[in-house]
Length: 337
Ligand code: KG4
Ligand code: ZN
Image 1 (cartoon, helix red, strand yellow):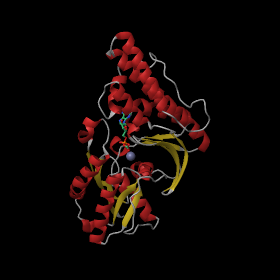
Image 2: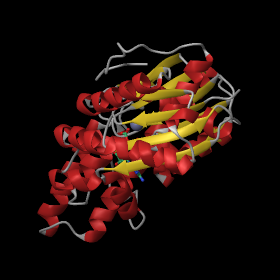
Image 3: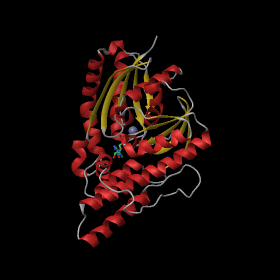
Image 4: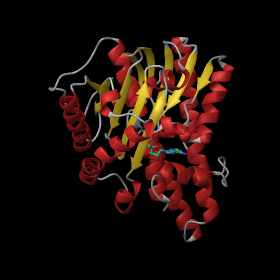
């Protein structure tokens, strides 16, 4: 019998609940974002996020059950993000999941948020192990060989900022709204990526490690030079800076993906996380996969960014291994794969 599992996600600024079945059907996936709550602060405020999760999680769960057309009695397990993430939010999710598990007698399954992202290609496309995963989100950037539901080998990652974080900071430097990724991408469409020379950090170094904070500093310098020269930041220059920055990020990710593929000989490369929403990044990665004659997979956007369907699915994978957690399941702010 295929299990029906409720997933709960609250590790950053999305309050999410979903119902997913073992035969890969997403019966519902509710995501309540908090962008408006954090907008005036220019970034996610942990205390505000935790309070919002505490207030909204049960509503998200009720909505997910209703949209799926199921009740708690139809479920086979409760899966919840137990980390890594902002501890207040993770705690809110874990406490709710424990309460539901205690009240219903259903098994409780703790899920690593990163495993949720990394296993998404199995939910969306039913791909087999092993495959290469580039996780490129607001807080994370790493290459993983995914060999099993709990078998991840980290090949490399950023040694400082994640690309999403860099997009957000660049947006701030250029007076664009948050989240920065979509705003910078929109500007980049009108710019010339060759107009402003920016570095390609760590490309001269072997391996799959990356660095994006120097790029941000280079953008700051380019902005200051333009302001000093033109007496302000002209719209055309701003677009050029965005285009140059986006091209630099895409080129670094693509070249490191080429190396990761050569290193692993993986038959498929998948990308996940908010950065996967960027069309220039997607296109650069797809070109690398084509050249290496491997399959490229980018899950639909709502399943690339934070969601609870991926958490329910990762829970289903753990259940299939015969695993579950007890009431001592801990919320972990740090939890490397
Ligand atoms: O995966 P995600 O939704 O949340 C985390 O788990 O971090 O990623 C959010 C990040 C933000 O930093 C946002 O600026 C970035 O993904 N992002 C983008 C784009 N859309 C979202 N970055 C570049 N281009 C985009 N179109
Ligand atoms: Zn995430």
